Length: 329
Image (tube, rainbow, N blue to C red):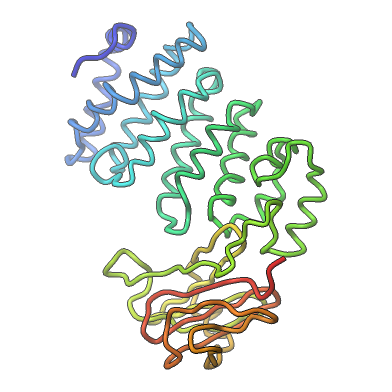
């Protein structure tokens, strides 16, 4: 496939070494997709090189040396070809990375490599809104001053985009207060310490009061790409919800920004207290403290559990779980 003149020159200068790397990858993995590799080099890789050169004319060699290895790794693990059905890695390289060309030119491995790895991890989290994550990084990433700050922003943006299990870690990140405030939907000049205290006081609080009244539904049948072989059973352990399905146990993470599932060991899961049968109000609603929340499942086979601030509901007829705030802040 044809490539730009700058890339053709840089590749020619390194032809022997780069060909050896591809040959080594094909030896390790006979199924190495050379067509996907060539397409990624001629497409996202070449386009990003142009942005890097525009930001730093002497940064092409370092980008090619490091980026070539990244593309090989992406192809080997199926993230630069047909397996990347969401296109999330390609979008990082084509939509986000050019906006961060200055940072990438200065340190391609610690910036582009970290963003690619984050995208791969988030692609496996069904509750994460990838578009939101990319948009926040595109908006705020150019204002970060170091690879570490960019990585912190990626984690903060992931939490804000639905990765509820990152909540505590995100609130403790040493990120610029101005950037952190904007990332969570507050004013740039907001007091970050006060925001953190408010978040810790109520997991359903947000600066813009954006928590969905009916919460979130998460989960699916394994045959449809979900985690549950059979409709999950609900229990409570301390202040956490535990879901079990066919001998597997999961903890349910949820807050105003999203909900997700993490597998846990059977010993911990079996120690949880089972949920109670639910009683519906008005035929289609569950009571949550002083308010009613819509529920689409019939009362038959419905179970409910509560923690200090959250309600979870499961049905014998569904592979999903609904989770919402007991009281909206």
